[in-house]
Length: 264
Ligand SMILES: NC(=O)c1ccc[n+]([C@@H]2O[C@H](COP(=O)([O-])OP(=O)(O)OC[C@H]3O[C@@H](n4cnc5c(N)ncnc54)[C@H](O)[C@@H]3O)[C@@H](O)[C@H]2O)c1
Image (cartoon, rainbow, N blue to C red):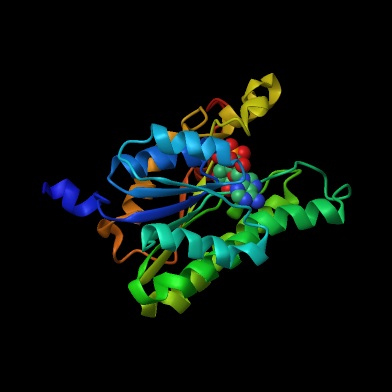
């Protein structure tokens, strides 16, 4: 085995990935499977993850219909997964939704829906996976947060609160489950080009606003999240836990809005 394989390869590991049919989920599935993982591809869209399972490198990937917000069904789903794979080594919580609305317009229904998927779903799916297996075997939890874990934008109050909750929850998972040899980390993508964000990037003013504030001047590609995900899923990250890692093209570093022709 090569030195890089020893550090980063995932041969023999089972990775459960939620939101696997989405823009970021699909890229992570490809990266993790290319590193040797057997993927459990979970999403609302079963047909899409069935197709993805056939397309990924390696074989024996498992497509699963899962709604993370239906907490009453989580136990049975994880039992079914374990009956097929015998183990789960890594859980990647990637399923997420958003609805852009002003604080004054958000209905209770919208609030509940976003929280149910982005925060409550992460909480109870992870609790179920830990109880059913990880607390006995150890393993890795990777939560997909957001730029809005740290910095907000107008119109994303509920989403930002849910993702900030995910960052806090990640720290709790790390603290309480370190004794089980479980690490928990949160990856916070910045502005990534996926089907979810195409309308924003196609809009002239919105796209210009973002480009000006992103140090690298462009949206990220979903596959630019693979490197950190592999690191956090693999043996290379054994002493990394409880952290929030931003992958944002430098967006949180600050902006460069005008030429240097004034003292301030
Ligand atoms: N695209 C970005 O710029 C960006 C930035 C920061 C964070 N994120 C986060 O990354 C993750 C993936 O985003 P994306 O851009 O790939 O979005 P996407 O809409 O392309 O994918 C989301 C996937 O989650 C699935 N999903 C939705 N609700 C679900 C549920 N209840 N149960 C199971 N699956 C469900 C959808 O079917 C979809 O396949 C999300 O958590 C999102 O908040 C995205």
